[in-house]
Length: 345
Image (cartoon, rainbow, N blue to C red; front, side, top):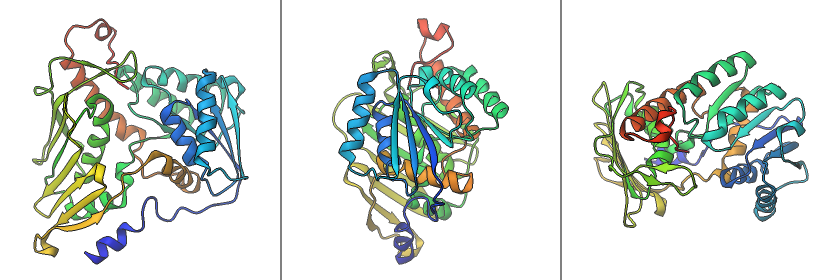
């Protein structure tokens, strides 16, 4: 267990080093998540030009305030704010696409038609239409651009260690909370489940989702409540429950024949047990990864190594499409479904 705690201290993205080269990073979309990306990127350990794009003047003003409130921007960081993609420089070293899912495909097409950029970090949920996944895959291939999807739970040192202990055994994964938002947040846990178990042959069952579709916090989008169930060919199970009412805090449990793990997320407390402890629980603090302290680490790893611990686009797209197909089967007759889309973000 001492070795487990020592490994946890390594944190996220071990081994990322600065090259000292000035780089240009664009953040497309300056909403709430875009602002968190900017706060993290202001922690970069090298000279950076941050190019922020959003058509809303209010969003750009909020992004500027978010950087000021973070109080972390160094003199080596410069920031430029734009209302459209036309104002970007012709070459970027990295772009973070933080717009909503309904416009992400169109924004990507517009961006890659105007600038050259070797690397992208894409926010989830990726797209609302199944056809967009094929379009973007071809677009990335055409432009020689590598892309990763921002599902960062798999980058947490604790979960990397759990994966080594699980070693491909059938895995049982359960998360429950009130107002979790299955449409918005399920993909994080599908990704972590697939990462931990090393299984991509996942099937989803939506029979226990609530019949009534809820409105999302963002206007124009929908949410799902109830229980989403997943199964893998080797006997692994996934269960994600979002209660429509109440204030149940999020609880994550992961188990297989080699390890048991409990995570009370809001309290940032975790417990682990296994043969090495005689199956006695061992407690350790586990801070939940905040985006405002993550993006610069992913960016540094990508710029240094051309690689990221985040899921690659191809891998994540398969899970996204699986989830989108499951939700589309559950939605019944709706005007937007006739257009072949599911308005989650």
